[in-house]
Amino acid sequence: MDKLRLTGGRRLEGEVAVSGAKNAALPIMCAALLTEAPLSLANIPRLMDIATMAKLLGQMGVRIERTADGKMSLHAERITEPTAAYDLVKTMRASVLVLGPLLARCGRAKVSLPGGCAIGLRPVDQHVKGLQAMGAAISIDHGYMHAEAKRLRGTRIVMDLVTVTGTENLMMAAALAEGTTLLENAAREPEVVDLANCLAAMGARIEGAGTDVIRIEGVASLAGASHRVMPDRIETGTYLAAAAAAGGRVRLSGAAPETLDATLEKLREAGATIRKGRDTVEIEMAARPTAVSVRTAPYPAFATDMQAQFMALATVATGTALITETIFENRFMHALELQRLGADISIQGNTAVVKGVERLQGATVMATDLRASAGLVIAGLVAEGQTVIERIYHLDRGYEALETKLRALGAKVERVR
Image (cartoon, rainbow, N blue to C red; front, side, top):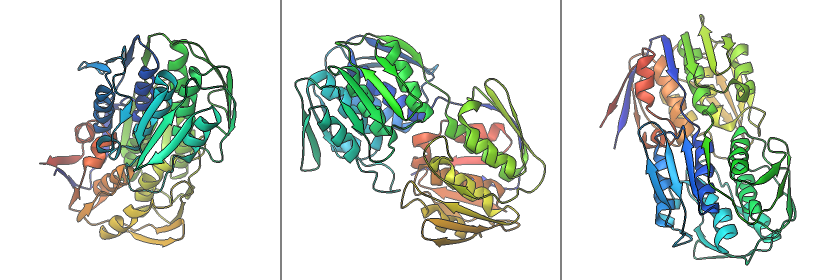
């Protein structure tokens, strides 16, 4: 199993390009199930989760072609098997995003209950309740959701809690439903907007994406389309947090600065100088960071996917930071690993109290989930001596060419196979 070895203490300098957003690409790939015509996508990152989704769709009969320049063509002319089996779904929770499109297109679906990172329960009850309100009959048997509907019907759905994948699943299902669907308390994330833009290019009638009420007027069929996936705002934020912790000057190209307001504001509070262009973000950090407290919440508030990176930043900051996690109940596992590097962290319920220390010390640590891995990388970049991160398959799920990009910024990092 691969490991990552970092030698800390180097400032980061230079420019790297931001990859396409994993969390936008995955639902957009599932949108290919809604049409018999080809869907052509650009800016698709090379990640383990993307490969898993491609394999899952391939098992259903979708023909997929990839090129080296980040382009992908998906053609679901015939769906031969509307089933998402456990062996793939268990590795990636986003696999549940096939449920809505399969039900809308085929009238039936068999989807395993999802797995993914061990950061919390992340139930699919909002997906199920929404589809049932649209007329689907859904039962859960032996770990699988069995869903049937002759044709889904538009209705008003008020979600009990904000769920990104739930919003996306129901939005795709509603695109082919009969009548109008109102999604209330919908997720407002940029990735939801990106999916809506792709669906609109395919002929869907969607209004309100990016707000908490989305209106979808169902159509009889969707066409093929071309779409470019948005830049990855979490990858962008991760490199910015790394530069804030290690010091230096980093420019990120191909970014979407307008999606990063909460992250950029916290980096400014930490002492960073931020410059935004149309599709670039530049950070300059000349001194030791100042501790900043964060509280995760649905977009446009501070993202839970940036929590681990800011905890790593806080470990070497001056002062004390309170890191409060409100989205997932089990997302502080990286705190124990950061303690192995010398971090002063105590957990009080859903809040971590992080007292900054002057320096961390390299050690062997273990990645527990995707974003925890990124936090450990940031800690390794600033720790004295050598840090080895085990189980980095988590990183490969969500960060394209991480070690290559870090080396381009002057970091000493290598993959140990």
